[in-house]
Length: 374
Ligand code: G3H
Ligand code: 13P
Ligand code: ZN
Image 1 (cartoon, rainbow, N blue to C red):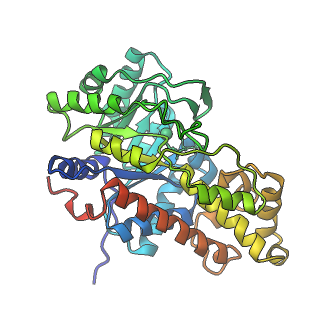
Image 2 (cartoon, rainbow, N blue to C red):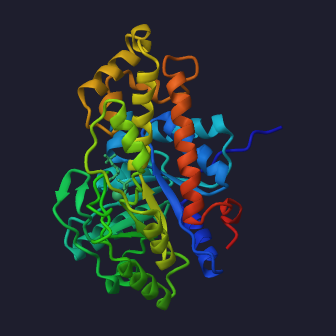
Image 3 (cartoon, helix red, strand yellow):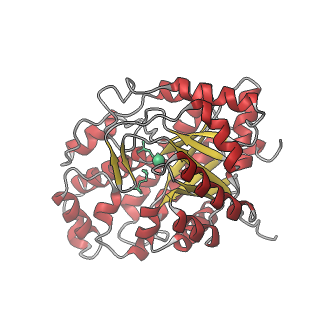
């Protein structure tokens, strides 16, 4: 029998399935999960499969650099889809791209790109976003823009406080740029320290509600979609596990799930999650080394440098900070038969369980079969 071809989709039919669900009274959003290495991709795919959800797998500029370029990332995702026999709808998206990276990713197998021009003034942001849309749409590739600034780290820049997007300008942004999706700053922030109450005091879900109402009024809502960045829940038990096994992660606080669900009811259709997966991976490595005393001595080129690096960086949660010590080839392929196999099996399970749970809570479980129907 001929093998089914694996095709990466634009975000549009995927997000439209969530919008159709909402219009039928079941608010839904699709999870967009960041990826940096092969097993992380397998875990995300298996989580999507458990929940029968469509999904977006995204790589930041940092992830592309870590893996040696967007072509390496797209090949890695296709290999992970082949290994898992994944035929549910998936997009491969560039997260927080600049002009240069967006253009490269369009050439190198991504099915969607973000152009984050939010640091520019609105007219310049619109002009650059529009330019990328013109290039991408000609190839069936979707585009996400960003409007407003999230507090905290946005790629290389640290913003002290949120500059909220003006909801009344959201339909205008879509109309001018023809972008498919827009990240509107509404009080979330990237990373594990989202504020004393998970940033709830800064959250302005009404911005999403007003944006969505405006989009509906202009008939934009079936083709254009709102995105929530900085949406990790930062599970307390993962932080506790990291700290129990030698880590030192302080003041960690995520967005409570019920707040994310409120944002979905308000009209958000794409939800970005990176930090939760970083925490799960780091907790798993730390626990593994603690429960398998001396395992690193049998693996001088792989497990030993990872353990040493973790020991030296108790505050690290980004896996790239300690995985950069090993040959990147090992992190781009199936770890079966390598020194990483045992720990990667545990990581895959952690990630797939968490992704499946989030997809359920976001309301997009079971929507995979609906993609492309409207
Ligand atoms: O921008 C936020 C995402 O968590 C990606 O982070 O740029 O460190 O890969 P990164
Ligand atoms: P978190 O840091 O909350 O996971 O946000 C991820 C994100 O917005 C990626 O673009
Ligand atoms: Zn983001």
